[in-house]
Length: 329
Image 1 (cartoon, rainbow, N blue to C red):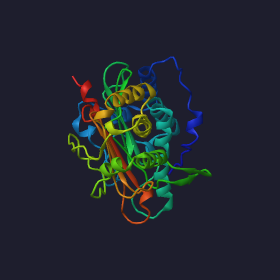
Image 2 (cartoon, rainbow, N blue to C red; image 1 turned 90 degrees about the horizontal axis):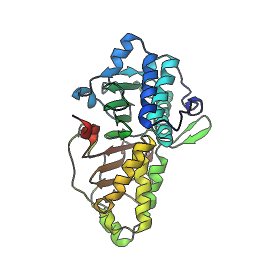
Image 3 (cartoon, one colour; image 1 turned 90 degrees about the vertical axis):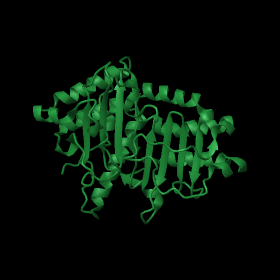
């Protein structure tokens, strides 16, 4: 199996011209990737925009337990892999790209530990398109594998990240001599927010029952849950800022133009947003949820034995626009 120098891609991928719009950058990167493929691979990467089966073919499970479709990165040449990652980098923000690389690296750490017959690792991630990459017409870029499912719908410079599964195991590891925490900022910012709440706010925020996993994870498209916890309308200006910084760890994964638009939308609806916490007031040991009219974020440590802070599931959804349904004809 090829061992890829994923971390080095942060430095060697060409920087695209800032003057180009997000739509142009992403489409050009998609076209460049397609040009590296042979005819069979081009058929394998492409799906119809309205292909309902492919749209929902994502999971937190390893690929041997939940079949993916598209092109497996381990089957690509070095040139093709580099082009695929260049596309991903164009579609994401700098910190979003760094986060996704960290999640992929964490799966490689699982593979190297060699304690399972399940296929983990950098090779076991898939890329696909739904619809033809375009600077104007809607299309979708899907990228994922174990503990990762990005469903990025593009419509010009607009972009929709949801629904996307952002998870990691192990949540902290060593890579090329450095400590990596792909979801470390989420974990730390959530603790800072809950610790900022006064006694009345905290009493409302902390749920009286234990949440063990995502309520709206894979297989729960179209569902919703009633808001719980403390309403952000009671927050101080400082607490609102802490919440927005936490939310941006998910909404800010997509490229900056779309991320900024989404965060402004979320900020405009903060009084209708709720924050809930379930579990101890310790970093990485509790479930939490941020829920507003156009946003649901869940973070759920997994209690499967050992250190619960090392295995995290999270989900980001927009009940009004998952899979870019507002762009559908």
